[in-house]
Image (cartoon, rainbow, N blue to C red; front, side, top):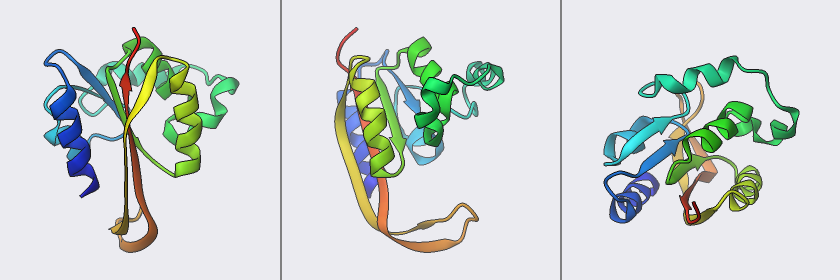
Length: 139
């Protein structure tokens, strides 16, 4: 299970005062033992104001991850870990951006098979789900 391996890696590497920024809370948020900041504001209402600020065109490439608000959250909260899923080609752009901000890829998690579609129907996705875990290596 992709998410299970990601959770195990975070829980093994994280220090008690570390934080993680999650693309979505879900299973990861439930099982990860450190402080969580979720992009959607379910347990982190402090992120909601980012969605009211004007978008920055230089971050248009990040629209798959929440766009300008997500990039600003990274800059302002400076989480120790970032876990996000998406298509591999879009995640490559995020990886390039984050490497310039002191983050490195700590793990890549890929699985093919069944998953839930946006309409909550069970569908087979031969490309599967792809998650990347980033870890801050420079302060």
